Image (cartoon, rainbow, N blue to C red; front, side, top):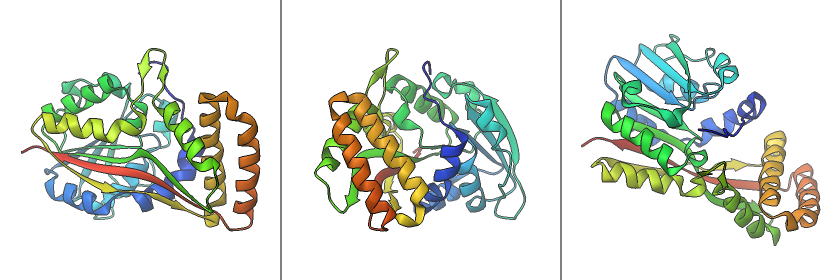
Length: 269
């Protein structure tokens, strides 16, 4: 992927607990039953390894995890803290590469392919590349935490739908010639796997946040509104007022946020 969207270690660390609570355990358990032994998991866009830390205890051991990410700084943080169902750490290999340029050969020997919070920053062409490689490997694919574009915030504010719409347009933007999938990612990948003759099952995986996670809510809210303003600069003045109101509600313990995601499990016939 050219013009890669930067992700910080701090943001990934801040969201890891919320991600772990939200991912679909029913789909993970079904994936575990399908995973061939010896267990070799290829995790695409692995970041700091949060998917590995969450999923490894649910899979049979021993395990080898191959972590793919373009950012070697994130991968350096990924080699710690995971253990399989027997309590042993997996063997970890890292590959610094652009997952949008994945080849069929890169997933040879995989018994499971995983992704988390990745699809919405891909283009259709990159998604096609990944699906083609998964199909060639013949291994199930567990795809977690793809945004759907829907956000619910309590108490209601008239700005909610306006900023949601602008944010979703920003997610679908074309940047450096790349038309991002954004909230359409899960539907696109489902279509691609289905066209290849694979079965796909989906499950909701929403973030449910409140004032017990003030730092995460504040960071998410500022990023959500900031992206909306970047897409529609005329919202800037309203955004300042909106963030002040929501910040006061958060400080008072009165704010609840649900960010909807979808998890997918795809497997060959």
